[in-house]
Image (cartoon, rainbow over all chains, first blue to last red; front, side, top):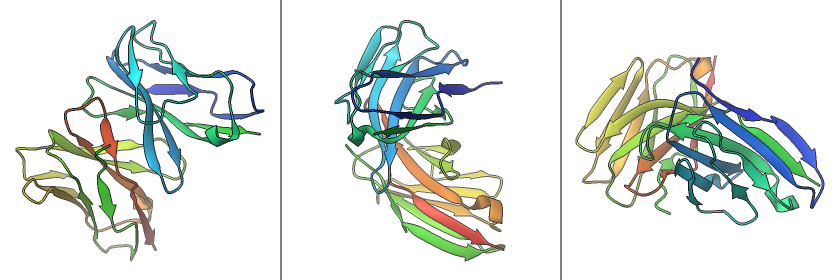
Length: 112
Length: 110
């Protein structure tokens, strides 16, 4: 089944404790992206990747890192999480940057 | 960013009625897409309409695109309770990403 998976689905952590949210897709998509969704602010892009080893900042990249060592995986790293990073995070992939995006189920993060 | 904006922000109708939501955007686009999100879940793609298309259908969904007015509409006919969700438009303006609006929250009551 074609899908985008994210782990973990729920995470409660404390300020400053490094964490990684994994994202994997099995559709051989070149483009992958991370979004955060906050009430009243809609979906905002954090980082995106056009292909392996090609990543770039989206609209809200501060406090986040990503890597794209393999085509299928695009982890999101929070080196020192802060409470303002409490949010619902989505990974998405597509054949190219303007085409239909396939979303993961989301990761709900609470930073205390 | 060149965000699309959905209108209305919230819509409440009864089962069987039609639901119409609109999206306006600011710059020229390659395509416009509509997504649905059930509460707290991932977005699901509904339909993509390209800039040279004016109307597209998929089941009970009808999407129109007016590039001269920079607007699109999504019509859901004969709504069901299962259509209750948030609906987002997203525009491909030729940049590095789709730009999503803040969504229309649709409530369909039995």
